[in-house]
Amino acid sequence: MNDNLKLAELLFPNITKTPADMEEMFPPRNLKEGARVTRLAPSPTGFLHFGNLFAGMVAYKTAKVTDGIFFVRVEDTDQKRKVEGAIEVMLKGLEAFDVVADEGVVGEDIEKGDYGPYYQSKRKDIYHVYAKQLVSEGLAYPCFCSAEELDEIRAQQENEPQKGYWGPYAKCRNLTLSDIEKNLAEGKQWTLRLRSPGDAEKKCFFDDMIKGKIEMPENVQDVVLLKSDGIPTYHFAHAVDDHLMRTTHVVRGDEWMSSCPIHLQLFKCLGFKVPKYAHVAPIMKEENGGKRKLSKRKDPEAAVTFYVEQGYPKESVNEYIMTLMNSNFEDWRKINKDADIDTFPFNLKKMSVSGALFDMVKLNDVSKNVISVMNAKKVYDYTVAWAKEYDKELYELLTRDEEFSVNILNIDREGPKPRKDIACFSEVKDYISYFFDEIYEKNYELPENLTKEAAAEILEAYLKEYTAADDKQGWFDRIKALCEPLGYTPNVKEYKKNPEAFKGHVGDVSTVIRIAVTGRRNTPDLWAIMSLLGEDKVKARLSVAMEFYKG
Ligand code: GLU
Image 1 (cartoon, protein in one colour):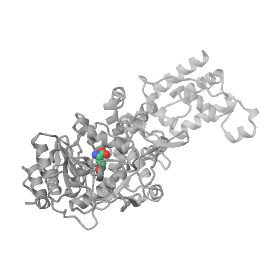
Image 2 (cartoon, helix red, strand yellow):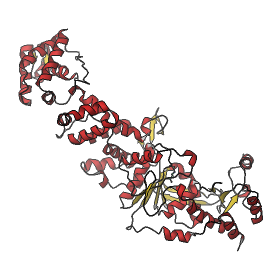
Image 3 (cartoon, helix red, strand yellow):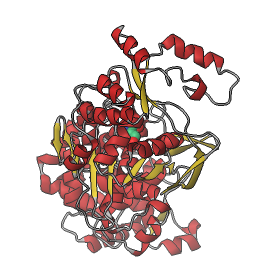
C-alpha cells in the first residue's frame, strides 16, 4: 500500500464506500435530450432576498423551458448561521411566486426525490467518500496549521501578489506520513486541503451562459475541502452535490464567479464533468444617479415578504421579474397579450450581464395592468385572502356581502379599457373606502373654480331630481338637464368657446355630485357607484354634503 492509500485509511477509516458506489447510487438521470437540471441552493438564513427569488426563478425557468428538473438543496453546513424556521420562510417565499421544486427539500425536513439527502448537513459520509479518494490519489492532504500559523503566513505575504495557502507557503503540503501520524497521535486538529495542481502562469476557461467566455488564471490555492469538524466547505460540497445530483446548469449569484478557477479544478480532480455555469448578476437600484445592489438593509423591497405583505399577486411579480430576466419579454408580451407567461421562451443568454435595475414604479405599472385584466371575482378572492392575513377590518367589510363587494370591484372592469387603479391588494381599502360608512372619510374640498354656494345650489337641485331608477343614460340626461337652469352648460365644447357665458359645464356639476357621494374628485363610473350604494345612502350623502356647503 502506498503512503497516499495509507493516509486515506488513516484519515477516513470508517468510509468503505467508493466513488463507483456513489455513481451507482446516483446514476445519470433519465431525461429527454436537452432537458436541464437546475437547482436553488440557499443557506437557511431565514431571509429570502428578492435576488434569491430572482435567481431561483432563473433556475426554475431554465429547467421548465426544457422539461427538466428544478430542485432545492439546503446548504446548511454553516451551523452557526442556522435560523429556526428558515426553511419554511424560504420555501413559502418561493411558493408564493410559483417557484415550486420538483425535487429536493420541499418542506421543513421533508425531502422528495432519488438524489438526496438534499440537506448538506446530512451528506457528510458522501463528502468523505470523495475526500478519501482525493487523499488516496495524492490530491488532498491534512493541514495542521493553527490560526496563528495562518496569520503568520498572511503577514509574510504582505507584499506578494499571490496570497493564500499555496505552493511555498503551504507548510503541511509535504508532511510525511510519519509526521502526520505523529500529529494525529498528539490529537492535533486538522483540516483537509486540496493539493492544487494549478499553475499561476496558465489560464482556465469556461463559457458562462450569461456572462459569455471567461478566462482567469488557474487556481494555485490549496483550498480547504473539509473543516476540522469534517464538514465540507462550499467549494467542495457544491462540486460533489452538483455532480451526484446531476445538475446540468449551475445557476447562482455572480459573487461566485471569482471562485470558478477553484471549482473547475475541483471538478477535474474529482473526475467529474464540469456543469454549465450561469452567473446571475445582482438586482440593482438607481441611487443618486448611480447604481447599487438592492440592499436588505436599505430597501424594504429587497425582502420577498414585502411583496406578500403588500399584496402583490404572484402574476404581477412574475410578470415583472420576467421583464428583469429577459430584455425581449416586453416585446413578446405586446404580441402575445393573453398568453400564459410559461409559454414565453425564456433564454439565459438574454439576461443582463451587469445587473437588471429594480424599479418600483415599473413594478406598480406592470401590476396595475395585470390586475386590471383579472375578473372581479378573482380580485375579490385575492384581496380577501390577503386581508384575512393583513387587514382584518377590510376582511370583515369585504366578506359581509360578497356580491356587493364583487360588484364594487367590477365597476369599469371587463371593458375594452379597464381602469388601472390597483397595484397591490393593500391599496384596495382606500380604493373602495367610500362604499363603507365605517371607513369612508368625508372630504368635501372643491376644485378652485367652484364655490361652496355653487356646490350647495347644485346639490339642492339634484336632490330634487335624483332617482335611483335611472339607467346610465337617464342618470346622465338628468344631470345635464340640471345645468341650464343653474347657469351651467351641458355642452363642454360650448363652454370652451365661450367660458364667460356660464358658471361652468356639466363636468363641474357632476364633480360636485361625485364629491358629495364619494368624497373624491376622481372615481370609476359614478352612476355604477351610486347604483351600488342605493337610494337611501346616496340621498343621505347628498344632503350631508349640501348642509356642509351651506355651512
Ligand atoms: N449556498 C450558496 C449561497 O447561498 C449557494 C450558491 C450556489 O447556488 O451554488 O450563496
